[in-house]
Image 1: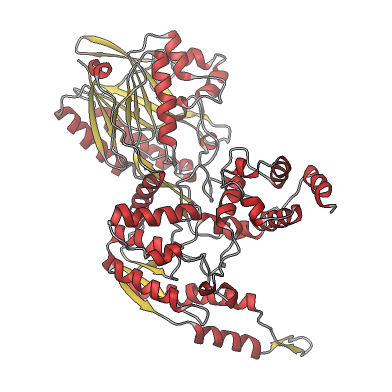
Image 2: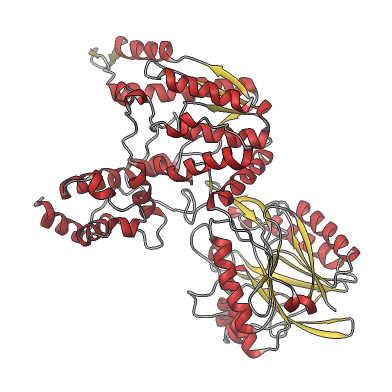
Length: 630
């Protein structure tokens, strides 16, 4: 009876020494549990999202060296693992050394070669080149290699043959994207199943968390196992990896699929796990329980894990958060308090003349509920001084001796307040407290640049910037009801109209707030970013003419008529936000802190942008003229 261990390990990107130490420990644990085979994730020795560290030949040699340590440890157990494979005699298309994303199999201290591969390892067939993935920049695919050799990938795709305990097993090895083949011309699993008698498949993965992805994977991989009438082991890593601008959590959730496509075993999310399964008993195993949960529970787990891992990676133990009495900063505070402990959190309220007693009181109540440190730093005196200095001091032309004076508008005064809070108060407080300060922006604000450069957009991490406003509210309620089991985010904050409180026009006590109508604009902005076929003003006008805007956006019915009585109102609103989204907001996003990703498309490297300015298609301009004559 073959016992297979799924090694759901934490991968530290760029640290093959740390990863190999983890692997050797887990190999010893698997042997102690009498496992015959242990399966590790994709790229578990080097890590996956490494930027251009793949261009460092010294690093590549190091990964090779640590790979040999793992091969040598394959005594009395078969070890399948992911690593970078290098052919030092060949080159990639960029002229650098040839690199493959590879699955290695070791037994008795030696590599086991696939039957038809030209190398003693399995090469990844399908290389993703979308979202955060940039595989073709660095790696050579099996399809390219086949063309180079004058053959086909179908002929090279072949199983591993293992002799264990006097019995032969044929293993179909896949690497991550090889299992997500719907939009490719080649399906590696089907090829292996059609041409070979496979006893079980393994899919080693480095698959970042995305909301809803696990459900989709269970449908896709379950269907593959069922169609092949063969069990499938999906092994993913945990940990945190990034490409600079976007931070990704890896949730693990390694899974065993039966030959009938059922999910029979699932490793806990975000936990290092060694899960041993008897191959012969898979079909008799009952379906793994998967209790239904609201999507916000999944999001909370990702954020909690991501924040904790990020803080550990940068060795930050204390955090400062600017607290306004609004929902975003309140949710950020409740999250960080839960991760770090309230004793390591300092909340700072920075009122001006425009901040109401309501929000000041709610800020204090939040700090009291959480039990963290609290500081009040009024900013009005500093803002007035800045205004007085800028308006009273002369601007001189030293060439001709002329002078003039700056004039501070109400809009500029709003920016001065935001910058004073972040660049002066929060930055100074964080340095004195021995930590960093957060950026509390949500995704709607980030989409249209509803923030101030060097002001509230500043911080070491934007943990909430991949959550739409409605998700921030959902998270507030989840934190109260489930995580803390009591009201830590005051109900008054949840009920309050969202407002920046930077002028009298944003008086919360009078029900005045942000210009963003979140019940509608959350979904409008989402269509600009997260739809696979991204929406543009042309699409929105077509939907408006069809009467299907809410249906296509997924927002509540009736909002278009409520907010925009006429076509002219609808178009004015659309163009206002499109101009910002594709204009100044891009410059702001480029300068924003790293964003913790949870959605199908996060800002940063996941959503690549060019500063080209807003554009309206010919068809849009024609429809606009038909509708309002302009």
